[in-house]
Image (cartoon, rainbow, N blue to C red):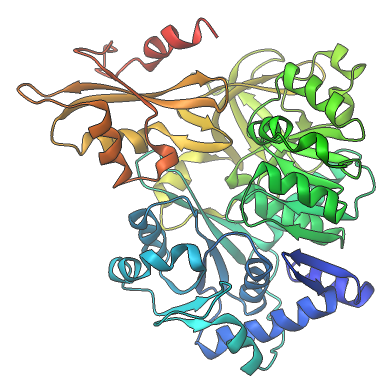
Length: 514
């Protein structure tokens, strides 16, 4: 199984049909494969070899998709970079997996000099924006026009395809290594997990650096449908694009869906083409679902649950469970049932024994789409694998019908607006401030984002600190969305016998009322 197979097949079977739409550009399947083969030739000219890492630091675009396929075509490995990271975080990911070549757009030109200074491994920067290439970069279209196409390398199966960085419980991101087989098998299994309506046009709203966006890309490519790409999420742009391009399906997190429904322009556009909304990152609130069903009567809804380490989908909650009749089965709060190629087992956190139906424990997963491991982190890899099962760190249970309910996050992960934020990473940033003695970061409920980051801080003796100072300091070290939205100054924390902060007690005051 090789990921470039999908564009070979589409070019052969639907050569003149539109493959991608981005702003005013429309590209056929045949044009896509021609441009990908030439762009792979560009990478070869820059001495990109088998399994070299190639970075993408850009907003969504047709160029982004071409760069993914060209990297794989050349036999190399994609390193899609989180566009919400600060310069230091970006540099870490480049250095960690020794990324020599980077695609970059206009959004990140202002930090390019700093990025080069912080990332000595970076040698070649290819500008894939909409203006003229700045000094120190190569122009995407110019390179493409001067290049000759090369033969597909046909890397496949367990060959490394991607290194996707995800938040680390030790304060540093971990590079999840995904193979060609893992990504493609997961895409096929997700499509087979639940019946979908006929889809001709998919709209990409989720960022392509995220495993969810990447998964949607390959699911769409397998179906040989038109992929409409938005550079970023904007409710008004989403509504306009659905009507203009007759979009049939899109992936949203519940927060995005709420913002679309609340957009003042919503009632002024015909969205009847939208047949399927796939959502993830959190279960959907019944009030929001009822609002969405009323506002989008032609649309059905599906939930997916997963993680980067599984490429990414583990379970799917089908459309039927969202209907008025289906809601009577009480599955709406579940994450759905495992996909055809995925096994889920609940393990008791203390004994390691498999739990009975309805019994809470750690969610473990076994599937052909498991990651190869964490890049250059053998200890962390060994810690999550046992006898072929991935121990996810998420807590939950299976009901008698085999539906998975995710009830807790054993790793203290915060999910805010669909973004995963690790509390330890935020804590490490705060603790580096000279006035901070101790801190604990937790999720607190938020009506708009689901959860937000709340920091509790003990200040050192004879030091002073205020909320604005803490947040401003954090913004120099971590991405803005990870920074605390609220600060609480305390004189002590509840501690366990081992001296660990009891976050369960800290959370109780905020979640007992929710």
